Image (cartoon, rainbow, N blue to C red; front, top):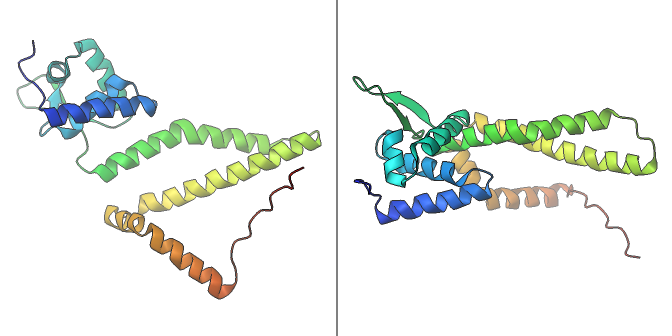
Amino acid sequence: MPTATLPPLSRQFVAHFGEMGSKWGINRTVGQIYALIFISEHALNADEIAELLEFSRSNVSMGLKELQAWRLVHLRHHPGDRREYFEAPADVWEIFRVLAEERRRREIEPTLSMLRSALLESPASDAERHAQERMREMHDLIDRLMKWFDDVQRLAPETAMQLMGMGATVTKVLSLKDRITGSAPKKKKKPAAG
């Protein structure tokens, strides 16, 4: 029976984060470990995490290694204590940046690389030309999104938060600009049903 227990609100957050983590492709246990570290007032060692979550020490060790590989926890040492302590970055914007960079490196960059390679091929048929054109559209969209993301990454967190809060306002300004200049984006024609 653990001597330390999580308060109900913390337990609810940790459980929910574990469930959401499994939907995002992160092991549920790893999600719960991260949630606990994230809400903790101080850095935690593996034994404390295992006790609070009632996980085996080996599961906690594997989870912490994964979180370190994702750069989502910082390792700390306390003077006179040989144990390792873990804490989440204090700035939630920094956590978002790290997550986004890691997902980009692991998922988006390989896709862009495959698309670039496919676009260098010479299509051998009309079907391949059509497929390649669709791939070009996908490549161009992902490439543009990554360039935009790079621009956002360079913004100060306060500026980025302001920009995100302006979503509807930016849309209205762009619509107004299109009406004034008469340069509304062209919509693709839908193929006729047949």
